[in-house]
Amino acid sequence: MSNVISKEVTCPKCNHTQGAHLYISINASNDPQFKKALLSGKILQYRCDSCGYEARYTYPLLYNDMKRRFMVYLIPQIDRFQLEDRALEDDYRNLKGIRKRITSDFNSMKEKIFIFESGLDDMAVELTKYAISEMVAKKLDLGRVSEGYLTMYNRETNTIGFTYFVGEEAEPFVQSARLEIYQKSLKIVEAICANDKKLSGFIKIDREWAENTLFRYKRVKSGR
Ligand SMILES: [Zn+2]
Image (tube, rainbow, N blue to C red; front, side, top):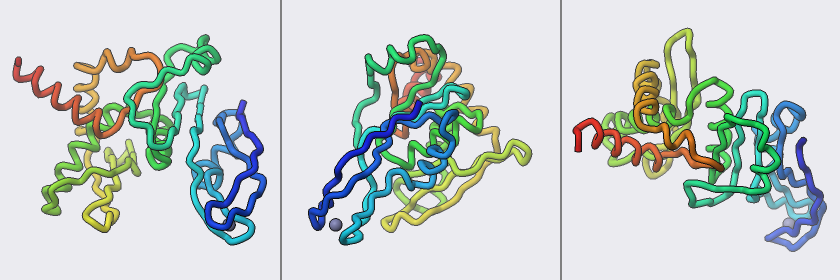
């Protein structure tokens, strides 16, 4: 079931108050129309009826897709690796083997949905994205390329593609690669991420996680 609440929202610019529907949770299988509106950004879009001020809502939103067995919890600005939510765990305790992720921003939430709908492993995708970001940084002679999202996956053409936001202007830069690099990342996940896969609650699989994991992998490989 999706959960939508009605609330009075006050405009931060002109103080006008209007009624709004806030989507607390979205069930992808039961309410595909909500899913569509979420992905287009419509659900989180606020517009003041009086002065036209526009912003994106920032409140926790849970997305669940029981058919594909994953949940993504958007908690704006969350700075934690793991989140246990007793009430939620109780609601879904009969369902085993569900991947539960937290993300701190909307774009990462959309990316997780795309990854799981594509049948990919998000840990391996994060490692791949990290490796390719290093290549892009070198290619463009930049110190660091840190923001990027999976935007293309095609098994027939054996390619995977990411859009990075590079430089001071955060210009989009698309880089694709062959799927072998993803397969290699998957091997790393299988070799050293068994514990991460067993963690309870919602976990944050992002660039920071990829950095730590690759650091760990290099240490294991070198036998230290
Ligand atoms: Zn206003």
